[in-house]
Image (cartoon, rainbow, N blue to C red; front, side, top):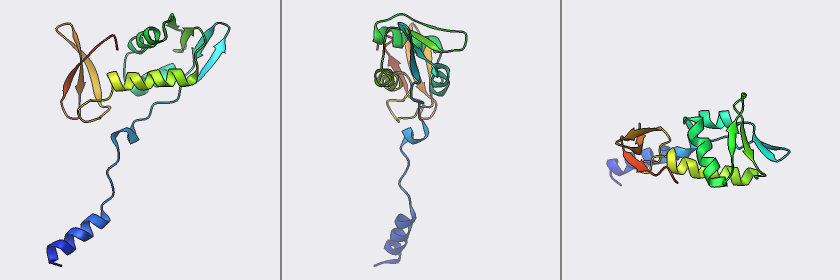
Length: 137
């Protein structure tokens, strides 16, 4: 073996696999409970903070996808009219992340939403990609 191949083999043996972009980005599981005919999303504000999105945007998405009425109370909890499972809400939050948070080009969660000429655009702070998103996701 040549010196180059020896050095290359040594370097590769000491190199770790790169972490997936989602490893550093985790969304808390929805903490839901029932209050009569309402499902209370206790950690909604924590979820929204982690997503770095406007609470009204996330709540509008959940309302549309669940086909229900919803509001935020003074404590920042989402109150969804009807009975919804943690799995269903978690699935919708995952769908929201895929549509409105994660960059489709590089997979980074370091993005923000902008409005350009009446279109909502997902702009990636990591790679600079700009992708139009549909508000009716």
